[in-house]
Image (cartoon, rainbow, N blue to C red; front, top):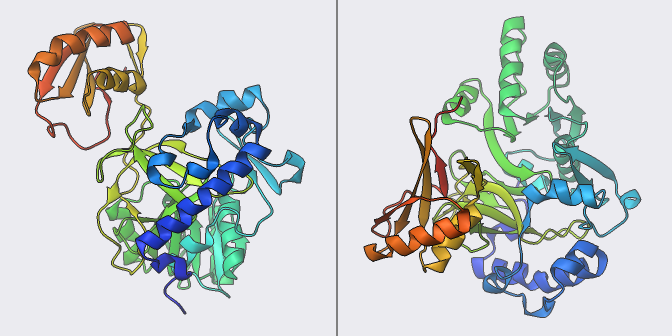
Length: 408
């Protein structure tokens, strides 16, 4: 039994960066040649010069939030997939709907690495309780487990008593699915008086895994690790130990950008997760997930050398409707940019029945408040009170718009 899935996990950071950024020109060239939407979006981009982080950051974003409308206008994949739909292995639908492709390559979603880190090994049985219909989560675990050399019981969701019976009979080594359904299964097993001693590990995703719930599983002999994935990208990052951060998969480049922009934030600052995936079938470059996170400093204690994410910290789409007008993070970012300001936050409050907008900006020059007020009104068609505070004073939580109005 080896600790690491492959040698890539212990590469020197410079070696990893050279490998990943060295693949970008080929990815961009192929995307432009085979996917009409990339040919349009990257028409002015010379692929051969996109070989480092700064060059990548100049490429346009593809926003997950735009996929529903883009696909509706150009079914099924908005021109972002490099092969005809009939040549794919599977097609899924996420809420929206957003249609997601799966190609023929083994472990297309790259889940074997996360399963290995969670302790799964060849010859074991994985009890897979992710859904098998419409969404790709079930296929993510199954194809990863097959690549690892594991057998899979396709449990799916529901049928709790039958899940308990199958686990008791087949004695799988571990579970894949949401943490909440694993808890339901274990509670049902206790209610039925059916011990499940084989269940020693789990890889979970799709929901939060608070420390209290992880501890609840540990008390029952199940070591639970989590991973971060989306239906568009597959695996993005995974745990190798509890509370050690999420290590980036070896086949993605992740940037953290200021919400509403494509501009990378300083190291450790919370921002939107933007992913470039080296997937020949679905070569998403600078895919803005809408999720907030931050990079953790240093390396994992497990010996893996990849960058680590802090975990899911909220949503980047903080659009607010104020006095009948929608205000988007991108508009706030543009106000700041016009005055050379790095960070600010629009707070929305209620004074009786009146919406109140307060734009707080970090600056060493309080005299800017008047000019910022005028720019905000011109761009957002609203008036906001502008407060100036010292640089570094705003919380590091990725919020650009903080809507504090009561709900209901």
